[in-house]
Length: 484
Image (cartoon, rainbow, N blue to C red; front, side):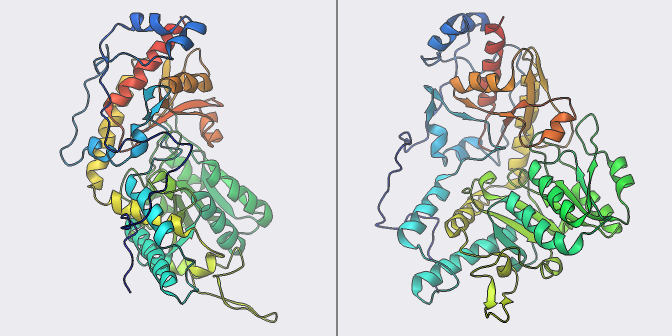
């Protein structure tokens, strides 16, 4: 059976405009470099807070030279990877916001989608839409084959031993809840411990609190060091024969910290504990091999990996997955149904009740194919260089303090700015076309470790550039000057 290539536009398929969005140019638009001006002069054009600043922002800024006073030398781009080449595949990166070119620095919340993913979704819905696994007609077979090709692609992406070890879910949050409700109900009981670092996203805390309450187990927080790393001495001390599960992120969404997951997993296994790894923030930044990590569970979300929202994947070791009972009942997950006895399908299908996000899987497949066209190690090296540059550049902003200082980290820059709450900082930057996140980032315990309730966060991806970092730093400097 020939599987239609859903990553390419189907000949003759209509081009369906999406209403409510700005017009997108067909070719990449070069962002003009900014002309060198003194910061005091720039502020005089747009400060006079609040009225004159708002008026000044109605007009696009004049071009400047990219190098701003006091900024470090920009990193050289490794020859094996070009962010500018990648940017050409992202239509949204060529739009404007408030009259200025978009600078997307909210990748920790969601990444943008390359045209290959957008076109794959359009091709599927315009030429190949069908339900899967239950139809006998041609399009049902084609859709099923494409869906299962997506499962095989995820397995290959994670280094999993078999596609059958992959369960499709809506995202990382659903994957963790699935493990808590399916594996947790059968393996947790009174007196059992679930170790959860203070570093974690709420999605890797709350499900464990909920199942612990039901099973009378307890959630044990693992403290952090002042730098924002998991305290490995405390972790080793907290592991006991009562520990049934360790739940930890492969990279922090608020501090960027990359813990020594492989070593922590090996230590947990010495006590007979299982390990779940939240890979939501990791998979877009560096290659992952679940067999090398020896993780029992690994979860990620497609929308943080240049794929659509509403699709994600859970990997589980085959022997662990085989023992997991269904969490939800319905279609697709059954073998036979009778009022006297219902039997369930083998894994992974018995954990995928109902019609899955078929289009999402098609989009995820296209995203993995697109990402695989680059050298992943070269991308990682590029992001590390960009991150180092951003750290030095942001250090030149008066009153700015970066939160967390772990040496092993992804390109996440969480910060506070003296005299400004994070929401006002984000609003100011938005007027300059710069998108960042402000708030507690669904990681309140991690921020509380630093005595904070909220912070601003700029999170970088493979398509961000040092010029965009300069725009961020320049706007923050102007905010400080405008406020006196």
